[in-house]
Amino acid sequence: MSRLPRLPLNAALPPPPSAGVAGDPGVCRPGGQFRRVSAERVVLLGGPAAILLQVAHPLVAEGVAAHSDYTSGPAHRLLATLQAALTVTFGDTEQARAAARHVGAQHARVRGTTRADVPGTPAGTPYRANDPDLALWVHATLVWTARRVTERYAGLVLTPDQREQHWQESKPFARLFAVPDRVLPATVADFDAYVEDAFSRLVVTPGARRVAHDVLTQRTAPPLPGVAALARSVTADVLPPRLARAYDLTPTAGRRAAALVTRAALRSVRPVLPRSLAQWPHAEVARQRTAAPAPRAAAGA
Image (cartoon, rainbow, N blue to C red):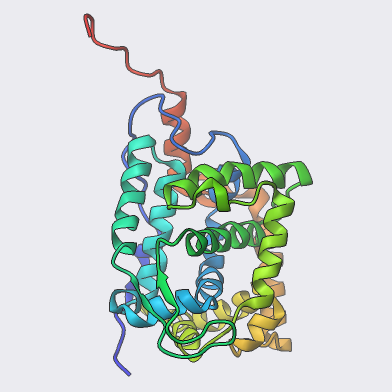
């Protein structure tokens, strides 16, 4: 097995974009529930679970297996996805669109047909990364894991109305990533039903397990003892139990204890953490930009 590149620790702290255009709210609603959840640094804990959910879709798994740029560095890919998501969520309108265009250009090259039979997906099934249904699934994994992780690990429990707002406010984000309105669930209840149905049909293939192994292997520079074990415990806690077992992440007593201690510790410190530590700096840049007066049009323009 080839050695994958190690990730510098500071790569887990992506810098915010430039201030952008004063007064430009961006594509996601300022002060809304989607930005509120996305602002929490703790969402990073859900990154591995989101990737494992994505590749448990056989067509996504095939795209990952067949395109080397996806497998050359899973941790780098996870953080590149994080940075793109933060830019789209908190950047000004053009920053958000540029980040989405960059991701779309990468996805445009990912297409082909499946090479092996998988339950529900026969060999020869065509796939493309920017297919609306696949794009919806990827979006859904990000929304679902962010909400689940912030509720469990930051104590940010949303009311039913806030969950509805969170889902509705995620739609402009989804549209930038090639998810059309015709496939977007109308309400959060529809979204939850869509996710539960998808969970029942996901298949963890050998290729998906290889991705899981690479994502959950300690590859920081310098190495941090215990990080991989903690990542496995948290991921086992976040994933639906059937999928955790399929990924050989059975919630053992040790993993349950590690996740419980982590949840308790993070939920106890979150109320006293300064905002600059608890949230991504992207959120503060967006707050300051939105509060700034928009530039006046030049005279005679």
